[in-house]
Length: 237
Image 1 (spheres, rainbow, N blue to C red):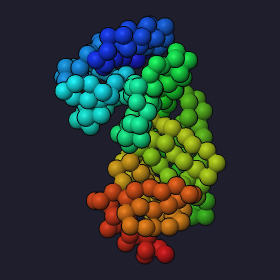
Image 2 (cartoon, rainbow, N blue to C red):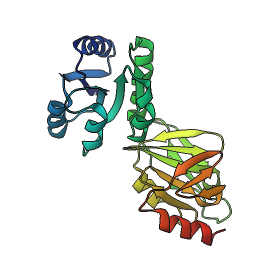
Image 3 (cartoon, rainbow, N blue to C red):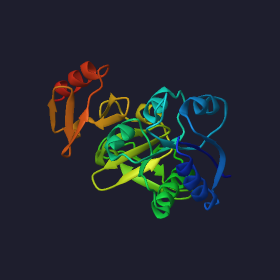
Image 4 (cartoon, rainbow, N blue to C red):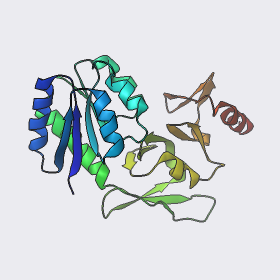
């Protein structure tokens, strides 16, 4: 099945470049293009869309505000001439960030990543009932199951309908929501700290203000989570 794709950009030349790129990838089907995000909002709400190539600087409604206002967000790839919005885009859970002029190999790299994500699915299954070394299996492609020990997991990060599981040595992206995955983890070992993060309680190195650090990386604690997080972590200190 082809991935239903739309392009949102107020520059006709940029739309034509992306249309040409999309036409060269057999897994993609371009179903519509838009020169403004307002019209695209209505379309996305009423139609099935798998991928959006989204410009940022547009009149009336820019790409970032468009993304913030979507109720159900498909895979989004930001396309812009401005590198400074990359962090904000990833915080809004864009899959990738392409800087114009976009070379075809970079475009193809992004698309191949999305195709791999779309093909992924997982049903985590506990493989150990012992308290010493519990584990799960995750499906990392159509046939391969990967065993992960819970004690190796550092952080689970939301990517909309996907999650990124970060362990001591690897990262895995699988097709699950953060909420459903977190519910299947033992609550005495993992805690949700933000709408985008669930962390391993015992892997926290430091807590400072509304953030904590794991493995040299600092993560923000969401306002609605901070009381429970601090009570849990300080209670386990």
